[in-house]
Length: 498
Image (cartoon, rainbow, N blue to C red; front, side, top):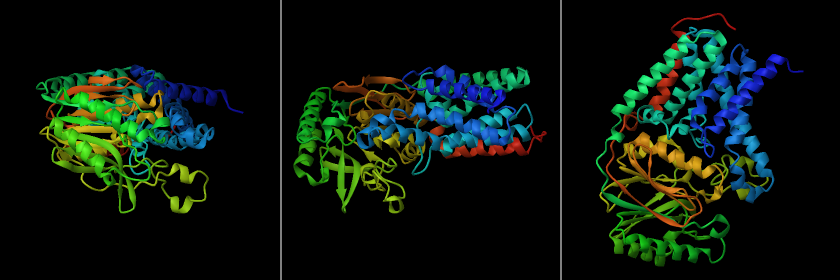
């Protein structure tokens, strides 16, 4: 039977996990994030390394089950009621990041000086959050830093990125937990005062707060075609008619950049590149408005399908961007050559090829764009690579219709806000059923369309204002936190194991 102490720790960890989940959309109670972190870290206090890992994993399982529940809307059309089991299993796997953070937190408590152990614990959590968010099977959703898109703490993302904001939230939580455990509030007060001072300085020096008024008109077209209709017979022509009509309406406002969502021109068993009639029609649209039109569709090349964005200018098709970061178990199945015998492999694997071509493109608007397709916008390293390669405006084309009206589209849109802050650039986001709009470099929505509404969103963009993060990048921040953790546990000194 569980001891009362273990049951109490599990309860506190569960409470922390629930509070962390509530910080994300749709509830979006951002201020509970450090409280959730505090409860989580308090549950680890005094625990052995085995119990720390178990409590961490348990809390992570609850957190990710809640945070990823919207996935069921996406995959239940393929696997039915098994979708719920799939999310629970996926959450159990992702929860190992929390368990590993708890282990690193145990090391911090046993080796670092008491006043610095919470700092190392916070770094441990941020390190593991970054680790679970990168690579071909990384899952970058539900990073704690995203929750602060509408708070003053978002200014810190311009310097240390979203993962750095996670670290800041965890510093507050870890020192709060330490204060309760050791019954001393002075370190907590110092930590909060330091973070407050750093935020004030970052806010005051933030270039995005004082920008030249943007002068380049842009439009994001939200056709509001649902997934249930998108691939039906006859839906292709309806999509073409709707988007051409909406774009003709948009041309009256003289936008210099028009963005359509991901795979909005859904050509079954073929690619847009094989349809010269459509290539000519979309070129005519660009020519009529002397604009750049970005349209999402499939690209069939060398017997391989790519999830692509096609760039049309008055001169014709001038560029194609192929999605580089594919969604695991949806657009491709990692290790399929060994796991082909599993059920639903054919349905889950989209058989897409990974893009490796150009990823920044000039436009008639006079700015270079960096395209990101759906899932890619959640990867800070992909956006950083585009900015580093000269992108001046980020373009996000996505098909969030897969997620219905769950928290998924809201979480995804919030992620785009942090990409704008990190890059110090405008973001033009076009989603099939929403949320579409234009985001300023300070992360605020200049204009946006709600879910499940057919609308053209107009806005203005300008040249980048820049940020520290756009120069150093996410890998630098992660390495800095890793080195800080190592320094804190090895250099200051040791204390007796708990």
